Length: 145
Image (tube, rainbow, N blue to C red; front, side, top):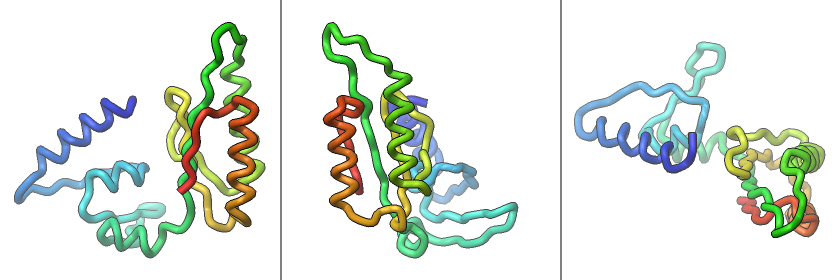
């Protein structure tokens, strides 16, 4: 689902449950749970493992970083292998951050990874890798937070 449609759907859900109503929402997306829920329960293999406010669960379990990449678009007159560039970027990220996980499927050249703190030995090395990908014109922008 594209970001605009996703936001429209989320706003509609939130508007439907204002006041004294509640609902149980199931999702695999922490971004979606964060946007829609006041309290979150996490189930593992059908067993409720924890429940609490979004902020409480983030503080307790949310170690790590979010890495967002925007794939570069070809310059005018340049032949560009978008699929090859995507594979190269994914290979670089998975070799540099072996326990990272793609948070959602790539959409319109946007990749979002969850990177565990243990995969980040040095922020300087992370930024050097990202600048290298940018220098090779594989990505145009990045955010590491």
